Length: 275
Ligand SMILES: Nc1ncnc2c1ncn2[C@@H]1O[C@H](COP(=O)(O)OP(=O)(O)O)[C@@H](O)[C@H]1O
Ligand SMILES: [Mg+2]
Image 1: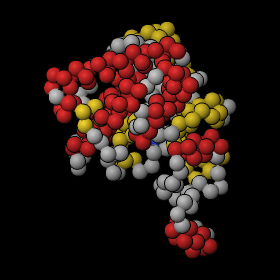
Image 2: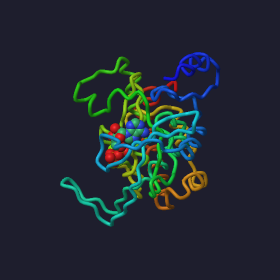
Image 3: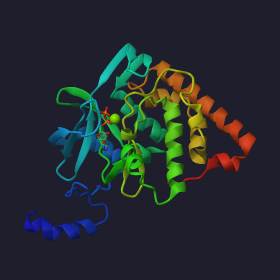
Image 4: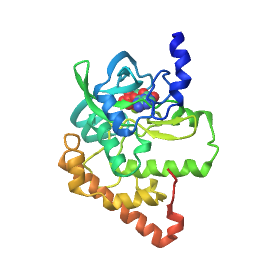
């Protein structure tokens, strides 16, 4: 590090609101809106493979001269009438970067934007892609946690986050929530990533049995989701059939939790999670 920078660094860091992305892991204090702007406009200064995962995505380092931060770049955009794996066949299969952006936007609408990193559309290396804020300080993903039998220090807080993930995945009809798509930071915060195989048109729930409890604030936001707001927010990312599927599943989720609350008591089903 340059001597001048080394001298100046503690001073600048002490100034409130200073955006100084000197160290890769020092998360600059950008608001979600500022992160969007940064992801759309900052210059690519380095490109490499993203590491885990199967679709060969890339990790880039972006810099605007003030802030330096990594981003994940996913450019896949495929649609097939039928898609078969050794385990199942899916009709109307889609694998699209657009759903990473839709996932972030939906989480934001639901007030759980802090669990899905900011994602924007941008052309990188000639391919229109989802460019997503890289989550810093990842300690492990869920696959690794299970393998290592790592126990969260606060089981209830962990369960509260996991139940938000479960509701979100039923809502978006996520067909790909494998452990690699849940990353966990050192402070045991869960982040949902990789929604390219979600947002199906099905008007039914994939796994109703996963809906155990629901955060109260999320439940209220779910009830408020409406077609007009979704159509505006998801323009270019979800088509009208995908929005209809989403709203039909929303109705089923709300009905499910209302029935559960009647049968087992509100206090058993609904909870608060200070976010
Ligand atoms: N925003 C992100 N922050 C941190 N790590 C990420 C992020 N996006 C992706 N990764 C890492 O890159 C891997 C591959 O990305 P992913 O979107 O899951 O693509 P794939 O389709 O290959 O599974 C993830 O499993 C995760 O380890
Ligand atoms: Mg993945």
